[in-house]
Image (cartoon, rainbow, N blue to C red; front, side, top):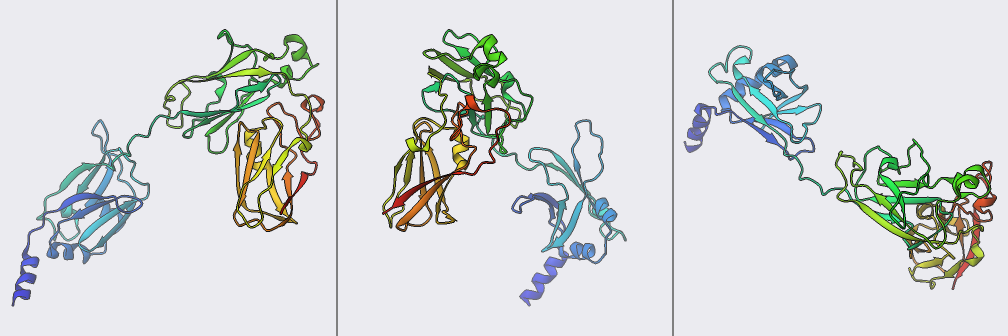
Length: 371
């Protein structure tokens, strides 16, 4: 008897339609709940076309002038007493949407007794992220050679598409701009994530004996200091300026005009059976970005999977394998594109290279042993 009474009460209960937003799925959906069992049965007993659904439940972008834009396209679903609308294009956080539920538009007029319900809602915007900042400039050491060719600026978040030409200046020890120091390139010098930008010094001025060098000399001189200044106005991927201006000052050391020589590198080999780091120390700092991809370790013909960390002002790398080191002979494989910040490669100094030089020569292979 009690069960029958409960069923009768549910059937006779009045509808109180309510429009809501369900943000639990990956793409938020619009919901309508609060229909009585009887009214929901009337709705589900009819096969509705997309156009009919849009007449009953219309979702559109709220406009400032009050004009009614076209309804958004999407799919409609009714389950567990709730109507759900999933738009084809996900709802944009922070944008207002006008939702109109018009039950009287149901064919047959069985819901004509229910008034329309209108609500404006929006997906909550995510909390604002902190402003993008410069997290580092490479080389990280306090000193660079007078024939410096390449530097990097790294950011805490993706940046926009603009290059650094308008936002990076090189200042001498008195704070004056070193005119013509950087190569003006209208090209993409970003990494794929747009979190690292490459600064190029004009190689025509750096390389001795060619016309720009003879006319103006190198922009950097041993014994001087210079500062790389990065302006706050540089826009990130969201169009916001950087958190603050960034400056880094360097001492200028004599030019490095000799090839990289692996015979000068020192190896601190790990113990067999351990996962200790293999530590390789170079004679001077090398190119940070190239170090991260130009080195690998092999045992026989098999490359070892592991982690490489660049340390000590780019003068050292450490490699740890995923598994313990078995005893035996190993090889450090160095790809031919590895350079120092002055453009010197293994066996070839930048001063001796010409435009025909490429990196198709075989990689250098340096043996070491684990005992």
